Length: 463
Ligand SMILES: Cc1cc2nc3c(=O)[nH]c(=O)nc-3n(C[C@H](O)[C@H](O)[C@H](O)COP(=O)(O)OP(=O)(O)OC[C@H]3O[C@@H](n4cnc5c(N)ncnc54)[C@H](O)[C@@H]3O)c2cc1C
Image 1: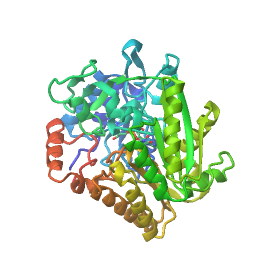
Image 2 (image 1 turned 180 degrees about the horizontal axis):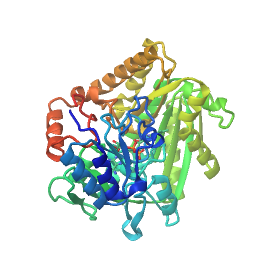
Image 3 (image 1 turned 90 degrees about the horizontal axis):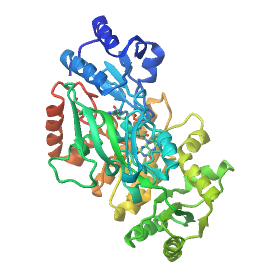
Image 4 (image 1 turned 90 degrees about the vertical axis):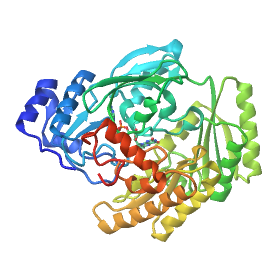
């Protein structure tokens, strides 16, 4: 693709739309918007623009479309696949000023928000009303970024991904047209489902300027449980058994021995040194909660668990989930000078055990000491593949392990990305995963964005 370089006339136009203080070509701002949290190479945009409304975004996109200037939307920059890196330069459109709650309708369990709102701040506000938005990526992502990547997290098993919790969107198309799609009704059969087309499209089809989200009541009763096993196979088999029993934990997370050892070594959390499952259960009554925990304990003991601790109180439960959410930071700090490529694959639950074995084999084949953590209840695994920043050979080795793991997941009927999106890192697997249907995706991209200005170079490799 050929794009125009930005001229001073272009900058003048942007200033006329959003104001001088919200257009920046300063080094610090360009650097800050050149890289997400992945290992992909930083690329600076020519300019960063902070918009405040759909009307401003519409004006910027119409101009960029007419002048063939690439535009990459930016939420919080916490992606793990290079999704918001402006690899063709141009304009980065930062939505962080659009961070308002537009309307909360507690009786309908719905909230209308702007895309730059961070989900942790939103949930802190909602907690006062006894409500929450369940998808919970580890980082404090923006709602727009979560929708664009179809983010998920530890609670997906019970509450679904972002995709399952968005009802309605306002989107600005590359032409500058502003459209609204979806409904506030719980269900609809009305026409093509554009809401779910935009969700997971990584800012390549349009820029989300407003979203109606589905909320859930904060659970009345909850309890956490922790159990460990002498082998990974035993742990993952129990995951399959629990899901197969029809019990739906709010979370069911797997940590391999190396990960629990690193967490335990901090002295803050004592998790032992064996493959471990962390679980959480939500219920309306104590009786129902106790019954679920009893059944799960029986399954764990039948499966040969070494220990089973349940009925943890709020403090202990919060500490447990802090340990899980901080696992990545702990692993980074435990090996100074080492960074991690966070692989993100998902398979049908019956294949989870084989996926874990395939990931272990791929790491061993490259002589790498990695870590395995995952949202096991969803069949989602995140192998953490170590590399040394700046060392090209170590990138090649990490990339080779990543490739083996992803190909194994796809061969098991799974996917190259359970929740982080395609971005740059997973483009090369799209033909293998989607075959001819990739052509239909390209046709959709060409329909919405015929000039290819929106987040170019993502999802499709040949761009
Ligand atoms: C420590 C850590 C843990 C993580 N754990 C998880 C996890 O458990 N689950 C998970 O799913 N993810 C996880 N992530 C990844 C990341 O937080 C998610 O992908 C998140 O959705 C990114 O949101 P963001 O606001 O940072 O978006 P950004 O990174 O800024 O952007 C993401 C994509 O959305 C596009 N975009 C942004 N705003 C808009 C908009 N308004 N309209 C259209 N497109 C837009 C961008 O162009 C880009 O393609 C983790 C990241 C880190 C660093």
